[in-house]
Length: 426
Image (cartoon, one colour):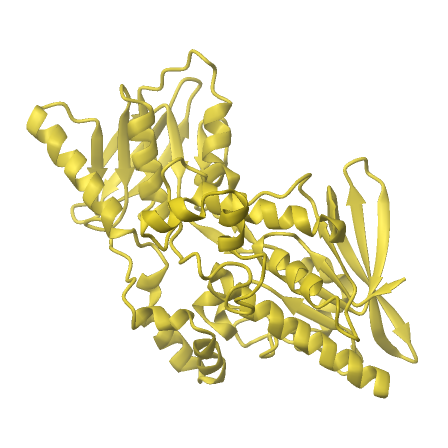
């Protein structure tokens, strides 16, 4: 069987694509699709599903609403099914708990589970040629038992997600973690563990959430926050700034000259990068101040500072914290260190093998991507290779966020449908 598309990865982006496929199944020319996910079940940043952490994006920007407000895959439909719709309305918020939104995603994933093969890791793509052109791709996957399988498709849609980023020279261990795995690592601690101190490195939302969580969860432990700024910077959630996440902004960004793209990213980085919700900033500041009043300080802010060195011992980790204005270096001993230092967009090109040589790149070495999220390829490749994620340089800041999932998947399916119709006519 030759599928119309195979999705690599099954996070929120490709989940939105699977839902759109399901809702288009009644059309005269519906598309067939299969999704491959290396995890054994659906999961989205499970290590950061902190009890009181909320979403930073409106529930109206769920998997479907901006594409199809009448969809029964919406967050509101989920609340209705869970018998919490009126409770949520009374809550008077646009931002649900992150754990609740994860429940929504898992609920939606369960409804399209027939399209997904969990426990299958894609190991490579192989071109299928016809009359000198690459018209299809064989997607090679390995299941958890080591068995290999192949799916043939006319289009591949990569939704590879994000890869945790650690500073150069830092290696994760039982005492040094990336925040992506926070709850998993805490759950793995011995039952009688009583940490005396933590260090949290980073200045963004995740860093502040980790500081808050550790300070509350371990009331006898000292929590040290290390970041290079004077303080946490507030995120810009104002209405005009939020227009950068609108679908129309993607068009404007895509058409803009390279220098304008760079300026726009610089202007609006504070909508998403290394910024913190103002309410959480206020909470942490009140806590620091209250501890000073009471004379017992557990929450310590090492601002305008960086980690200049790290030595892991059998019982703790010694950080060398450098105060940037003076250059003074001070040792900081912690039982555990959490790096909340962001993510790299996963690059699908290693999976392409020899096909990568047929994919164009920008002068900076990034993938060249067309407006419909399809990689720019040489003329002898007629199949489609699409990206969901890793396209900030071409499509703007919203390309890695939930904000435009519903709109983006519709554009990708429209592109595949249009191109498949053209191929059939040809």
